[in-house]
Structure formats: structure tokens, C-alpha cells
Length: 221
Image 1: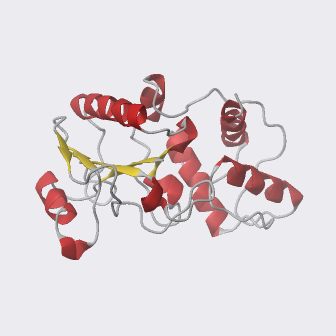
Image 2 (image 1 turned 90 degrees about the horizontal axis):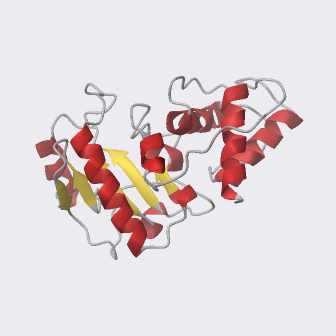
């Protein structure tokens, strides 16, 4: 899989120092600065420590099965801002090159928040996933109709269980227990950050459920 991150640090220099510090026990295959400069830090055939504990489509050791790219951005804690054009253009080119070298399906191009929704927010709602998909990197399909009631924290029953099962089918590491608790809300928020970024509230409204249906339909084509 291909996992995208933001650095979440105050500067590019501090992020690079951390990624190159063995004591930090964190690394990534690539770092892309805001001016578009691309630094290769770990060879793609080697395991980098970029994802931590997480899960995607049944894989619970994401680091062993992924290429990780860090984008210089202060993130939510230090003044989250849009990703500049030069940075996005460099990312597009790098991702296309990686996909040409590795058999990574479109649904396995994900964010850190997708594989670790309880812990992570990056690359966040300001990241342009739709642009990447238009460039052939990942999926951003049209929504598909999703009749039914809105679901949110405190809800339970068969409707919640079916919705959780659909989230798990798409890729999220979520157990369909029929209870819309904190984990389900975190997963729904991660889905929204990636595919419905204008409102990330963790509520499975019709628009969110339609987006999930569109993703599942696109994965079958």
C-alpha cells in the first residue's frame, strides 16, 4: 500500500532531523518539502517506521507492506495549512513512479488517518485527494445512493452493524458489533477527511454513507 502523511512539526528541518534520528524510531521512505524538493530517506525495498499501530484491509503490520511519504506541513497542532502547488505536483510525480514500480491497487492509496483513525488525523481535510485520484493515484468516485437513516454516536442495532461491516469491507480495521461508539466515530471521521472533507463530524449522514457506497462500487469494477 501507499500511505501519505504530514510531518506535523513546526519546520521541515525539525521533521528531517527526527526522521533521521535512530533514537526517534520513526522513518519514512520519502519526505517532500513545501517547495517540491523530494528527499529519499529509506529505500523502497526496506521497511520504514512511518505508520505505527494500524490496519488496512486485514493487514495489521502496515509498515511491512507499504511505502510511506511524509509531506512537510505543521499539521493540526502547529498551524495546519493547505499543501502548496509545488509540493502537490512533486507528490503526483512521485506517486505515479511508485505505482509503476509496485502493484498497489487504487484502494490501497490511503492516509495515515485511514490506517490509524483512533490516533491520527493526517494528511487531513486540507489535503487534495480528489486531485491525486484525477492523476491516477487512488480512488475518488462519485457517491452512490444510500437510503436509510442517519447514524451517529449512541446508535445501535442492525443498521449500525451493516454500516460497520461496509466500512470493514472497504478496508478499515473495525469490528461490526452493532454499537456506534468512539471507534466507529473515529473511523467515520477518517472516511470523511479523505472523501468528504468539508465536514468531518463522525456522523454517518446520507452523504457520507453514499460516499462509502460509491467507494465499494468502484472497488468492484
